Image 1: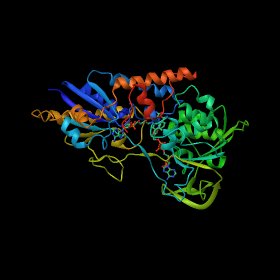
Image 2: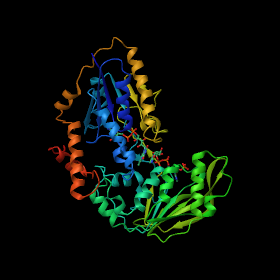
Image 3: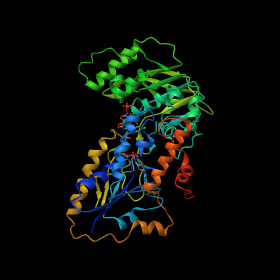
Image 4: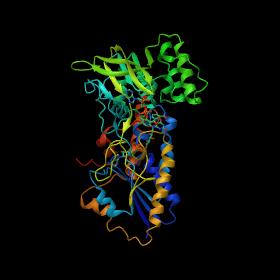
Amino acid sequence: MSLRVAIVGSGPAGIYTAEALTKQAGEQVEIDVLDRLPTPYGLVRYGVAPDHTSIKSIAGYLRRVLELPSVRFLGGVELGGEISVDDLTACYDAVVYCTGAMVDRHLGIPGEDLPGSVAATDFVNWYCGHPDMPPDTFSLDSTEVAVIGVGNVAVDVVRVLAKTADELRSTDVPQEVLDRLAKSQVTGIHMIGRRGPEHAKFTLKELRELGELANCDVSVRPEEAGSGEVGELSRQIRGNVEVLRSWSAREAKGRPRRLSVRFWLRPVEILGSSRVEGLRLERTRLADGRVVGTGEYETLPVGMVLRSVGYQSVPLPGVPFDGATMTVPNTAGRVSEGQYVAGWLKRGPTGVIGTNKSDAAETVRTLLADLASRPDRSAPPSRLDDLLAARGVRPVTYADWLSIEAAEAALAASLGRGEHVKLVGRQAMFAAFGRAPAS
Ligand SMILES: Cc1cc2nc3c(=O)[nH]c(=O)nc-3n(C[C@H](O)[C@H](O)[C@H](O)COP(=O)(O)OP(=O)(O)OC[C@H]3O[C@@H](n4cnc5c(N)ncnc54)[C@H](O)[C@@H]3O)c2cc1C
Ligand SMILES: NC(=O)c1ccc[n+]([C@@H]2O[C@H](COP(=O)([O-])OP(=O)(O)OC[C@H]3O[C@@H](n4cnc5c(N)ncnc54)[C@H](OP(=O)(O)O)[C@@H]3O)[C@@H](O)[C@H]2O)c1
């Protein structure tokens, strides 16, 4: 009897879990990797910035796991939609939830819901061609844009806003999105940190890239860059501070776009009556390690505010969820007997792709130790294939996904662009393997 495991979510955490299972299980194992989307790889496909092609190439590693004989990809199967937790526990010896963190965190300030105030999650989904985000969602018709947050996602968003469409032409950005980027009116980008340069979350390599943009001047105000000793700081933070200070001494070269990186400012209100007309900020300082307002305000006359203040997970129906940490409570990956968690859903939305590998390995060690302590377990009573067939659900197979990939390569060739150009929407993706999506 082989061990049957369902992994819900085919992002890095899900696929590293499958890989760890094949490596660690001392017995035969059958692994189904399910995803609500017709495509695998989670944020590697719909998060990692299109111009970061070397990072995106990690998909090449992940695909080798999906091609292992013991692993199946079943796309278009959503936990909470086509299937429930009870279905999964009836079909598998163990279930591992790896559904990531799909939605934005909120600022909780007035004006946040005005048209023109946009969550980075939505903007990233848009330029990455996520099937839930139509290409006509955004047009960049404001000249001044504020990006709130100084993490790596904010850096990605700024870079996409600052680059020309020509610079993004060889990427997999959907053609409809590229056409909209080509018409962008954006000239001024303001990136806002609520603390100082030494507290920024972006990494040095990503920050440096902003200073190398061909189409955009970057600046930092000397009084916000700070002038204190940097010797005590970690290498990474010292690097960030030194780069930012060097920008404060830079002269503008008259490039078409300008990026101003601001610090010690927190957003207090997004202004406007029917759409965004400005962003009101309060100067801050630290008091006992906490950010406090100084009562000094300034208003940026921006027509768009991109809120890049972090992602968060959403509860899965039938799975325990901690509303304070917005994660699934677990002990070394165990949620309860037969149920496990890995990735961003387990530890929150931090860390790079590789962090999920050790995280998944920990969960798998726990899972296999639990199963080893139940040597007399009986085979699960049902099969997912039967259950889905009875409901008229036909999953997207790995072969179907390869057809989507081939169609994206053909589209790129026909447009004279790069290796792939993303197909937009489920209709186009399903057409690539000769089917129509379920309505
Ligand atoms: C915008 C952005 C850019 C990033 N860029 C980089 C980078 O350049 N380099 C780097 O190292 N890290 C980067 N990261 C971090 C990296 O993407 C994450 O560490 C990693 O993707 C988390 O993996 P995960 O598998 O937990 O989640 P995800 O990658 O989000 O995968 C979750 C999967 O679960 C599926 N799913 C969700 N709900 C359900 C459901 N109910 N039923 C079935 N399936 C479901 C989703 O469709 C998705 O495929 C970036 C993150 C973001 C947000
Ligand atoms: N190239 C890459 O390697 C890459 C690319 C993208 C993402 N990632 C990874 O993915 C993870 C998520 O990135 P992320 O940028 O979404 O999150 P993040 O690193 O947590 O950054 C979030 C930013 O938002 C700020 N913020 C939070 N709440 C705020 C508020 N109410 N008002 C103003 N600012 C607020 C934070 O400031 P405070 O620090 O003051 O809270 C921080 O600057 C990170 O681990 C990141 O490294 C990696």
